[in-house]
Length: 328
Ligand SMILES: NC(=O)C1=CN([C@@H]2O[C@H](COP(=O)(O)OP(=O)(O)OC[C@H]3O[C@@H](n4cnc5c(N)ncnc54)[C@H](OP(=O)(O)O)[C@@H]3O)[C@@H](O)[C@H]2O)C=CC1
Ligand SMILES: CCCCCC(=O)/C=C/[C@H]1[C@H](O)CC(=O)[C@@H]1CCCCCCC(=O)O
Picture 1 (cartoon, protein in one colour):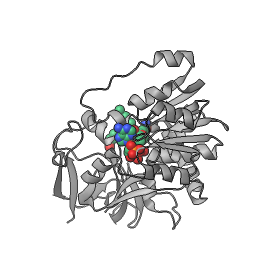
Picture 2 (cartoon, helix red, strand yellow):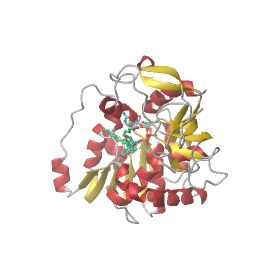
Picture 3 (cartoon, protein in one colour):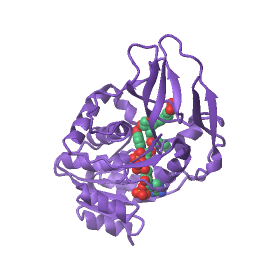
Picture 4 (cartoon, rainbow, N blue to C red):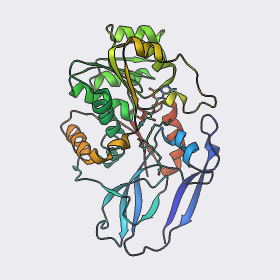
């Protein structure tokens, strides 16, 4: 018999999550039926969406939502023999049983590429960057692209794909270490939004002519300021709004209509699953860019399943450079 450890939502988050909002439980898993596989987690992901979605789709006591890279350790399903690696939306748990239907097989994975990247650059966050840039921002060579939360899982890939596409790239992030990293991976300009005296001036200095595209990961005040520095017919991909995920009272800000009208802007929100039918094609391209060294991948690895809540809260606070993952 296998005992699975699982993190559950003990209490709905109010404001910023607290350690006491989580509870670690242990359950004994049943025997496998025909067609089942037993999976053991190898890497787990902590992502910003877990904060807003917990209130929308979870009840107190539920398993925390999330995806992981897992290894098949027992199998009664010929499609997934023992030793197969899969990506699964199985929540914050060390072991789970699946009938295989919702598992994604890891594609042929080069030896030198860490499998954890299937939760980051060669996974959901990388796909978000890819489709947000090509389908919403519709980048063209020569465009100036701004990305917020630029040193994170999505943002760091956005900047590097935009460079591959021949764009000038400006990124902002919340520490000097992150800013230095952005310059190292090819961003043309980068600044620390927490320490610049004036966001208006920092944005103007980085691109005096304004921005063709804005890949918005943060929302809130920062994005309201950006709106006034978009070029005529600029395109804004509204990907995330992490600056407000922990707010108990929704932020109020300047309304968008006037700058949108004057500059004839295009602004569209999106969820990456819209392009699920093109997932495999895009993952192959992302994997190729990583193998070719055109995309550099940084990960913020926390060791130990017990530390998952701390890793999640740390990511929300900005402790991560690159994708935040947990190594079991
Ligand atoms: N639409 C979609 O389909 C998807 C949307 N997303 C969204 O993309 C965004 C980035 O996600 P992801 O790359 O996984 O996460 P990151 O790896 O970027 O981690 C989150 C980062 O957000 C930044 N941050 C935290 N609080 C604030 C704040 N108040 N203001 C500005 N920045 C803040 C921190 O970086 P810093 O130190 O720079 O502040 C932190 O490191 C999120 O908003 C997420 O919800 C992600 C995946 C899919
Ligand atoms: C105001 C909230 C904006 C959140 C934006 C965001 O980060 C969206 C992330 C989605 C991403 O595109 C793919 C996902 O899986 C995220 C949505 C998750 C939905 C709940 C999953 C439930 C489950 O685990 O079964």
